[in-house]
Image 1 (cartoon, rainbow, N blue to C red):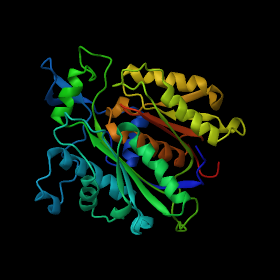
Image 2 (spheres, rainbow, N blue to C red):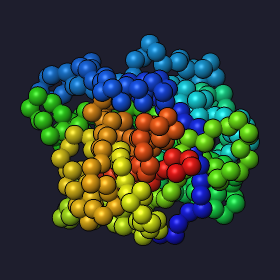
Image 3 (spheres, rainbow, N blue to C red):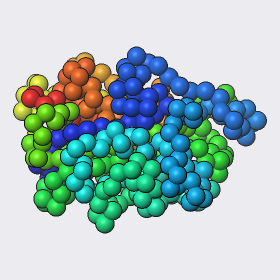
Image 4 (spheres, one colour):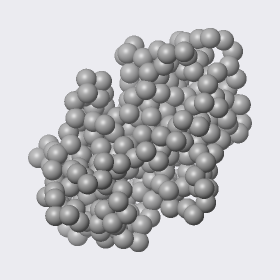
Length: 358
């Protein structure tokens, strides 16, 4: 995988159950504040499902232009989650007609309200912000979707097809058909099933641009993107093939081949991990980390934000990327930081970030 040209994260917007902005979410995760509670939805044993949901009263209402559209309850929820995050990431640089590359949930036949490209226009309307819809697209890839979209955004910048790109991801498990299917599969964490995940929701957007390009004098650069790695796991959670953890290990290898180790300071100090409570993902992480052990410091820190907010689905990868960039910019983490995420099916993706000036 070729190395991308230097790129920067200029702005971040995040909405999660533990914060309605990037600073709020970062503060909650840093201090271990969680928001997991019983929902009004019951599992197959008749007990309330534990979920990580944003406070409905704190989310902005649908704008008038969408109220008459007869949107599904899931689309309404995604609009209310994604709108404020999009506004937060929309800086003066994004007044240009930038494309939006948007990560969304992997398609599931059980979902009562499937999500697709219509969400691009819905988010634009809800946020009151315009972007280049003709060059925008969705990535229905689940947890790794945002990092895959980021890789394509950097390719657009490399080719000078765009000076800056908005990369986003928004998802919610608040769909009874989807929850019922996951419950039948034994994947949701309940009193009877400890090896499961807490379904959540969230949205994250980052504005990325070529390093130094078109940056207003007082505009902040939050972090530099050192590289992206991608892999595909044939033995994924819904596959009949053996799960060997090769996909995530391949993503690590692709990144580290493109970004060689030049000295001890380049070893990874912090990892933002896609672990969500299911032991399935721990095997992949173990295989990938052991095979690339020389790229990590002897003592490195691991963050897994899903402990605080539940698993926000397709938003997880980009939420963690935004948190890593925010913490680097505020001096709470040392460079470099690694972010990894694995989807239910084949997609695996990782990103390496560094603080500006390091």
